[in-house]
Amino acid sequence: MDSLLPTTPQGVADRAIQAQVDALYAKGELAVNEWTRNAKPAAGWNLEAFLDFRSRATASVPQFPGAQVRTGWLDTAKPFVAEHEGNELRAYHGVLSSHRKAGKKYAEPGHNSIEEVSVGYGFNLQRKDARHVFKTELGLSDKEFDEVFNGQRMLTPAQAEKLLMFGLYEANAYLDRSLGPGVPLRDHERAALVSLIYNAGYSAVSRSGLLAAVKSGDRAEVARRILKFRTAGGALTERRRGEAALFLGAQAETFFASLK
Figure: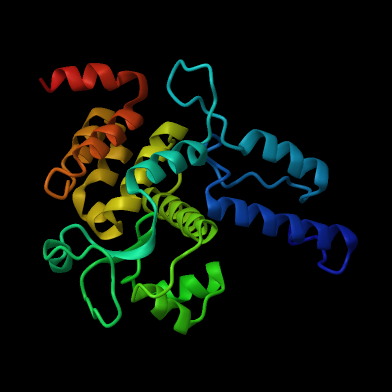
């Protein structure tokens, strides 16, 4: 609160806890079942108030409507994305790139490709901020980035996982910014949308009308739009069906039966 002076013990504690809350929001670990950012106690944060809020705001929605096992969105999205992306510790050319069509899967020194080149769990090395991400998330220099890009250096499994986590949190943050406040999502719905955003990219999702369908609450329409996304010549068909099924939860069987 503004009435809490930053130089007082309570004021310092209040601001320290608020910083933690803001960081957890940015990662998408809060507000998935409270659906509000307006949760700060009137008297300011203290440890007891924070722990109470954290216990209520941490993801705890059942994975599917009616399910008994509770799984947070990240615990659902991470293995799903990892399985479908696969993990290549050496930089590789995108499946639709000219290099791949010419039979060259992995990047080699001097390839100078302007097409998709990825590493790990599908991290795109051609994104404009890729060097910055490598510095901040992996502690790698520009020289080391170039070595990865040219297939001269492999990532470690731990580095690949760090990039995966970065991408998941980034996709989740984009989802929250795009939907805005007041759009409730169950954890399994959020996990499905994060997977799609991670794979298809922000531009494709923003142009698709998918987010408008999510805001409308028409869950079947959301599933239909997920299925319409690019499938890379059929290679991603099962992933799109999996994302649609994950989003729909217990309603998936009825939905897919209606498509026959």
